[in-house]
Amino acid sequence: MDFYGPGKECIPVLLPRRSALIMLGESRYLWKHGITPRKTDIIMCHDGDKSKLTLSQRSARISLTFRIIRNGDCHCEFKEQCDSQTSSSSTPSLNENVSDEKAQELENRYVNQVYEEIADHFSNTRYKPWPKVAAFLKNVPPGSVILDVGCGNGKNMTLSTGCFEIGCDASLNLVQLCSKRNVQVLAADCLRLPFKNESIDAVICIAVIHHMSTKERRKKAVEEILRVLHPGGQALIYVWSFEQESSDGQSKYLKTKKQTDKNDINSNISSTELQVCETAFLPVHKNKTNFLQQDVLVPWKKKSKDSTECIHHRYYHVFVKDELESLISACSAKVISSYYDEGNWCAILTK
Image (cartoon, rainbow, N blue to C red; front, side, top):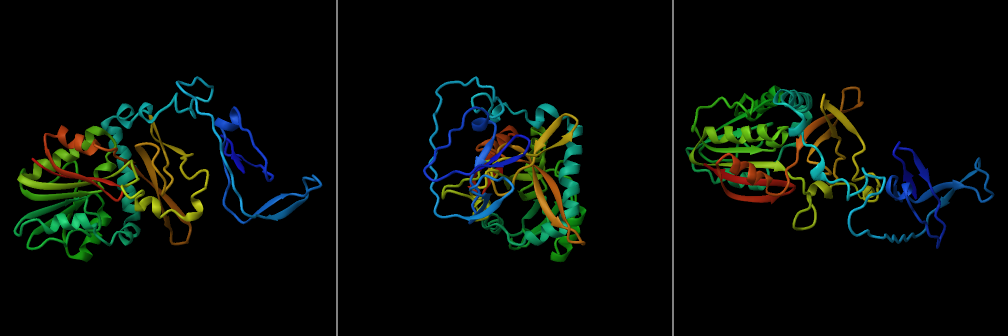
């Protein structure tokens, strides 16, 4: 069994057959532990000489864990690890720490600049429209004007029939990639759409608003969609969900994690934080695991020309259940329908 301390040190402990390991105090609450799946272990020889090691083959292993559950509040010394003394609701949000000016700087660095740098690689991974997005667009009446806010590489812009489609994105490099699809796209900020009031019949905004770093800016993005939307027109919004388990048990986001990682003791723990501005730190999310916090940095790994791996961190505010509907209602819009789709909260709205 491997024990990982607060300083990231690792101590392996040999557990003999039919033994019992009792963990109290710091070892129970401050240190993380788990059995990494592998076929062999390197252990000390039986004579106890620490300088002599041998390779031990593993056989079938069964580990039973018994825990005593405390009732009521806890007042132990391990406050950061204790569920009774800390909760996700007590974690300060960026709203409490970041001004609008700083929020814009954060998004420029951890959203806009990142997409400029990963545009080609990002586009190569985004080639197939999501079925429910395609269904929404195919139901738009012929002759309508459709706007794709945050269109990326334009993969959703050839799905309607007899409509005029236009897209916009803050990334110049993604806008240029759209030219390969022969679609009408321009560079624009989703908080300042360059279109007249009530000039658009249908809007889609897929995986964009979760990049806005404060509630006020997310609200402004929805208000801009409503401003350009024609009365009676409909908009479809997708945002990444904090809850990654669906009705069938799991989303594809979690299912794609390698089988060998299931027992990795660090698989659901974000051990790294980055300072995103003078007043805020954000955790770096471990890909393919459940989210531990709503405001996170998600790594994007890309190989450079010399084959070295570069990691770019994208900012996300992952939405909890009903948060998207509340945001839309705060903008005085009507939610026609809402649903969960492969790790995303989604809503169709009108004004």
